[in-house]
Amino acid sequence: MKPLELGATLHVAADPRTSFSSLAALGLTTAQIFPPYSLDAAATKAAADENGIEITAVIAHFEGEDYANIPTVSRTVGLVPLATREERTAHFLRLAEFAAVIGVHQVQTHIGFVPEDEADPNYAALVEHTQSICDHLAVENQIFALETGQETAKTLARFLTDVNRANLRLNFDPANMIMYGNDTPLAALELLYPYIQSVHIKDGIWPAQSGQLGAEAPFGEGQVDFPTFLPRLLELGFRGSLTIEREIEGEAQKRDILTAISGVEEILKAAGV
Ligand code: MG
Image 1: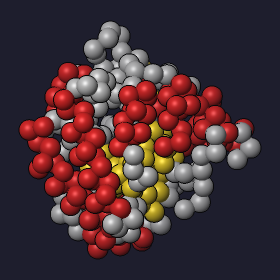
Image 2 (image 1 turned 180 degrees about the horizontal axis):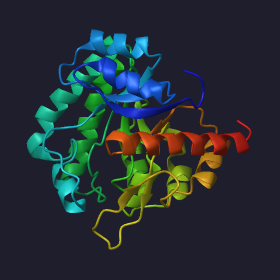
Image 3 (image 1 turned 120 degrees about the vertical axis):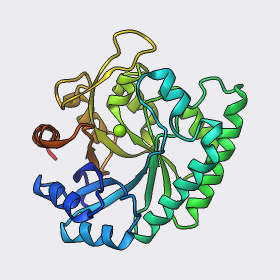
């Protein structure tokens, strides 16, 4: 992959060719994918190759997750909830295997709300559980990338230190920092930069009240301040993939992705990249 190559998150359909060709039609060359339900590795890889798309990450999401508001996210998302931890981990490891077959190094998910209080009885168990996933992935030389934003940057940094595995990395999502009401993306970037593997280009708006979730917004219409964020990311030395994430569907999604492409290209150009 060339440095700073632009891509998008992509839900791969039953016929992977339709998904990858629609991404290529937007002029994109990388994708972080939600695999097709079939987990047909050969068809997925062939469709990506045919369309000149490099798959930079495989993303896992889990049945039963609900992003309605912060308490619901806390109860339902990721590997933190104990009731579903085992079955979800098995699913995650199946996706890691799928990723290995198609030659993808990065396996990614929202782990869920890491407890802010390290004395929380669930905290130590989550650290240990994450270590075992990292060690499993290390066999295939893969990294476990956590999506940022649900917990504060400070809690996440402490968690990464406590897990203490070189293949535990971050997919930094600046909009999530805002939408969960946790940190400004710039402050979080300074703290978490050493762990950042990849970045989501997503915009968002602060929640109106604490406990609520803020809203995702089209690129440039939210509060991420990309004209400051992206140059600082480059200044820190980031040259990984930039993955546009716009969590809506259809023509409106295509339009917003195109807006994000031109917005990012303009900022990179002004920064001399
Ligand atoms: Mg994201």
